[in-house]
Image (cartoon, rainbow, N blue to C red):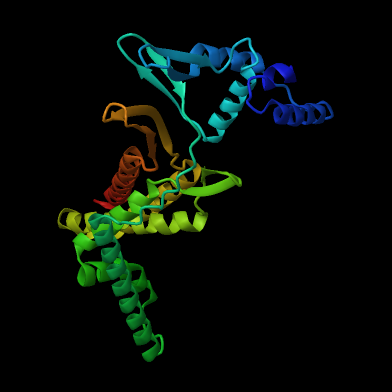
Amino acid sequence: MDVSDICNLQATSRVCHNHLEAVAQFATSLTQTFSLDTFSATRAIKDMRVGIMRFATNQDGSDWTLLQQALHDDTSWSFYGWAYLYDWVQGTHEVVSFEGDAGTLVLISTAQSPILYATNSTVSAATRLIYFLMAYTSHVLGFVALSCLGGILWHGFQMDGTNLFWFNRIMGCIWLGRPLLLVRGITALLILSTTQLALVEPTPSQTRFACVSRSWLGSMVLAGEATWVLYVGHDFLAIAADRRTKLYGPLSCLVAWIALVVTDVVWPVQPAAFLSRQCTAQDMNQSVQCSSGVLGIGHFGRCCVLLMLMGIASVVAMWTDVCAVLPSLP
């Protein structure tokens, strides 16, 4: 690094000499603990033809010229090019390719202060409706459960304990209704089909999303809530299944619950990010609006898989019940 050649490009060359000489002396005292593949990085930047541009004219403004400077070349300017690249990595600069009829310009922008956007806390009408429906069903379930507990205490525990296993089925259909039960079960399926993301801060100036595994208890609770879908299905199939419902119903719910828990723990949903940089010019040369891509945190295929697992659990439970009844027939 030739300090004199680099600082000759500066208007304040004396200040530049003082700073760069101090930096060069400090850099020589450092022990390099990692290897830098500068050749590959330089070649990649040269292939992209990233640079800066200026319009220049003579004093009377009669002759306009487009001046271009690549970030990396064989001159002392490459020092400033590396400074531009560092700011680009840090997000201070942006690189945009402008394609025209006569050619293409790949330009790096001027330094921009980061713009902080507040998180959009506006909840859609459908989400708000589902939230209130779930809150209503939870309060009704809790109220009836506490009432039953009070009745049990009042009568001194004189009851058939096995009836508690049918609490959800009977109370849900009578006090809530099948539509609300179905919405509650589908809501749990949607949560099981959504990845758990947390915003972490690896450095004071950077943040990123990290996948957080759902706890065993959380998976078991959500899987139990998802079986409300089976409760509604069994209620409709009771017309054809007759008395077999009380045999295959609990078995299918148990098998489905185990399958949902194992699937959520062993095969968690992963987020999907699609990078597709699209830029649109606003009013020709006023500004450029860009979108970087899409981040998907839910997977419709997982929801279909969970529904299929519950369907298979019901079929297996019915088949097991039929096989257990057939040998007893004369």
